Image 1 (cartoon, helix red, strand yellow):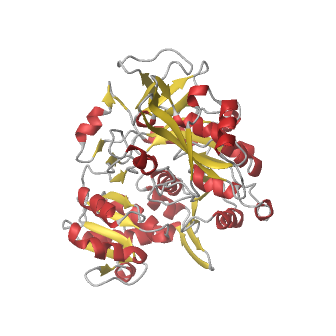
Image 2: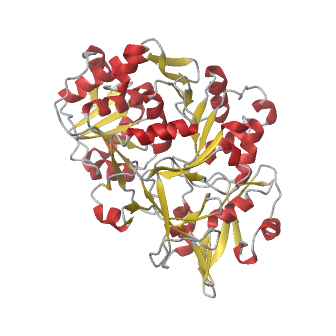
Length: 518
């Protein structure tokens, strides 16, 4: 069949492939024929700069047509694309670029200064190419080079490399790891998942979050592969997201809980200005959506649109909870996705056969979508491997219908007085309080109990909720040993760019000088 972008460019050359609609009226559009030509031009420029199959290319920038072109070009070359979170500190960015052994960096002009500052820390990089603007001294302005390059398909040498991606994990508990994934995975599995969810070639995908994150970026790439139109929001803003949804009649997206919480908490008179009825497939993922947030979403969007998936950068999509089960199975992430096998192992390494909350085990997954390795950290890959199955450390149980419930990450589990306590359950309960915007729960040291439950709470604006009120509410919904023993307050929880709460930062003051997996 050949390259899918090339096929779509031939079959539907004038269909919009990418719409980069920025506030202030700056709208950039590429048809499939134009995206194919731009990607091919970029391929020729990168090859002339020495990029070949298997080479690592770091890309960095907010959502834009330039990023989409880069993703397609790297795939056509057979290079390994390494997205870099532009929110990282200089030290963190230098670590990722150097660790992945990249020789070329492709960066939005807005973030070129980052690479000026870290240039001495990334000695393996031979070229920093800058798109969408001027390049600082020592870097290469690529826009004119791309415009002048050939739009023809590059005659790639016959090689086994089919292209790859390497996404560095969020690093919520330590140094990020490079999850290396070869392309493509089994196309039958991908097709079965898309059919199971009900995607169509005429869907319009709206980004909700940065493309450097595996979810928004992965579903964007899938949309292009299916010949759909992608609408880019350069930087997330809740009201502008609603504008884009209505303007382009978007039908699908992927979202972490944080953006949707911001959208649903807009004033009613603001939300009333926008038509949300076109949304057909909302993929909830990246971090658990609380039941309260799902109820908020369903009050503002079509009920049949809400899907939840459980997965990870390393393991791909593992389960799907369909719309008809969202309210019927609170707390569940669904059943196995097509062509995915899941096993639960207990602490002794035995397969868990029972059901219910007392039959928990660590989640191990086997499927074609599982990543290939942690780059230069194969020992960690092997550590998380068992009988052909792989884990990222989540704990779960099944109910009597086979639905899976993720309790929490193994590393986040609190052990208090010998009892295993899962913070996600407590967070979901607390977020049911009408005055709680969101909450983070973790263990803090206790001489008597080993650990006790601590909650960090973000109140809704204007609320006078106090610690007594939180504990009284928790007592109505949780067993006594799960009730937070102490509470602190923040205006905003620290998060990664993908919306995951940085519990490491929240824990650290409590565990300073003591032993804990912070």
